[in-house]
Image (cartoon, rainbow, N blue to C red):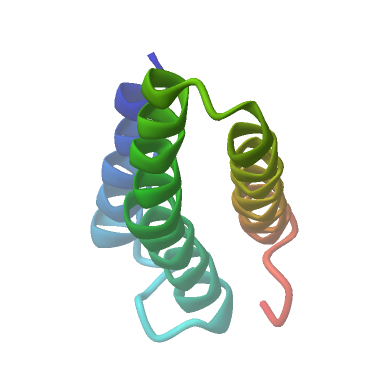
Length: 98
Protein backbone atom coordinates (compact mmCIF):
# COMPACT_ATOMS: atom_id res chain seq x y z
CA UNK A 1 0.00 0.00 0.00
CA UNK A 2 2.83 2.43 0.81
CA UNK A 3 4.86 1.91 -2.37
CA UNK A 4 1.95 2.77 -4.74
CA UNK A 5 1.15 5.83 -2.61
CA UNK A 6 4.77 7.00 -2.62
CA UNK A 7 5.08 6.47 -6.37
CA UNK A 8 1.77 8.26 -6.98
CA UNK A 9 2.92 11.29 -5.00
CA UNK A 10 6.18 11.39 -6.96
CA UNK A 11 4.53 10.95 -10.38
CA UNK A 12 1.77 13.49 -9.75
CA UNK A 13 4.25 15.95 -8.24
CA UNK A 14 6.49 15.78 -11.31
CA UNK A 15 3.42 16.08 -13.52
CA UNK A 16 2.26 19.19 -11.65
CA UNK A 17 5.64 20.84 -12.16
CA UNK A 18 5.60 19.94 -15.85
CA UNK A 19 2.16 21.44 -16.52
CA UNK A 20 2.53 24.50 -14.28
CA UNK A 21 3.77 27.83 -15.53
CA UNK A 22 4.69 28.94 -11.98
CA UNK A 23 6.95 26.05 -11.07
CA UNK A 24 10.06 24.62 -12.70
CA UNK A 25 12.64 21.96 -11.96
CA UNK A 26 15.24 24.68 -11.38
CA UNK A 27 13.50 25.96 -8.23
CA UNK A 28 15.25 25.02 -4.99
CA UNK A 29 12.18 23.60 -3.25
CA UNK A 30 11.47 21.25 -6.17
CA UNK A 31 15.08 20.06 -6.29
CA UNK A 32 15.15 19.58 -2.52
CA UNK A 33 11.95 17.52 -2.54
CA UNK A 34 13.15 15.33 -5.42
CA UNK A 35 16.52 14.87 -3.74
CA UNK A 36 14.90 13.86 -0.46
CA UNK A 37 12.67 11.36 -2.23
CA UNK A 38 15.66 9.90 -4.07
CA UNK A 39 17.76 9.54 -0.92
CA UNK A 40 14.84 8.04 1.02
CA UNK A 41 14.29 5.56 -1.81
CA UNK A 42 17.97 4.58 -1.88
CA UNK A 43 18.09 4.10 1.89
CA UNK A 44 14.97 1.97 1.69
CA UNK A 45 16.13 -0.10 -1.26
CA UNK A 46 19.76 -0.59 -0.27
CA UNK A 47 20.10 -0.31 3.49
CA UNK A 48 16.70 -1.48 4.67
CA UNK A 49 16.54 -4.21 2.06
CA UNK A 50 19.89 -5.60 3.19
CA UNK A 51 18.91 -5.42 6.85
CA UNK A 52 15.62 -7.16 6.05
CA UNK A 53 17.48 -10.05 4.42
CA UNK A 54 19.79 -10.32 7.43
CA UNK A 55 16.76 -10.25 9.76
CA UNK A 56 15.20 -13.12 7.86
CA UNK A 57 18.41 -15.14 8.09
CA UNK A 58 18.67 -14.44 11.83
CA UNK A 59 15.06 -15.54 12.33
CA UNK A 60 15.66 -18.75 10.41
CA UNK A 61 18.77 -19.56 12.41
CA UNK A 62 17.08 -18.72 15.73
CA UNK A 63 19.72 -16.14 16.68
CA UNK A 64 17.73 -13.82 18.98
CA UNK A 65 20.67 -11.56 19.92
CA UNK A 66 21.61 -10.79 16.35
CA UNK A 67 17.96 -10.38 15.45
CA UNK A 68 17.40 -7.73 18.11
CA UNK A 69 20.44 -5.72 16.97
CA UNK A 70 19.33 -5.96 13.35
CA UNK A 71 15.79 -4.94 14.25
CA UNK A 72 17.14 -1.86 16.06
CA UNK A 73 19.17 -0.93 12.95
CA UNK A 74 16.14 -1.51 10.74
CA UNK A 75 13.95 0.75 12.90
CA UNK A 76 16.64 3.44 12.90
CA UNK A 77 16.75 3.31 9.09
CA UNK A 78 12.99 3.66 8.89
CA UNK A 79 13.10 6.64 11.22
CA UNK A 80 15.65 8.32 8.94
CA UNK A 81 13.47 7.62 5.88
CA UNK A 82 10.38 8.91 7.68
CA UNK A 83 12.18 12.09 8.73
CA UNK A 84 13.31 12.69 5.15
CA UNK A 85 9.79 12.24 3.85
CA UNK A 86 8.36 14.58 6.50
CA UNK A 87 10.92 17.23 5.51
CA UNK A 88 9.99 16.67 1.85
CA UNK A 89 6.30 17.19 2.65
CA UNK A 90 7.15 20.35 4.64
CA UNK A 91 9.21 21.55 1.68
CA UNK A 92 6.37 20.95 -0.76
CA UNK A 93 3.80 22.68 1.45
CA UNK A 94 5.79 25.80 2.37
CA UNK A 95 8.00 26.07 -0.75
CA UNK A 96 10.96 27.83 0.94
CA UNK A 97 12.77 30.30 -1.27
CA UNK A 98 9.74 30.88 -3.50
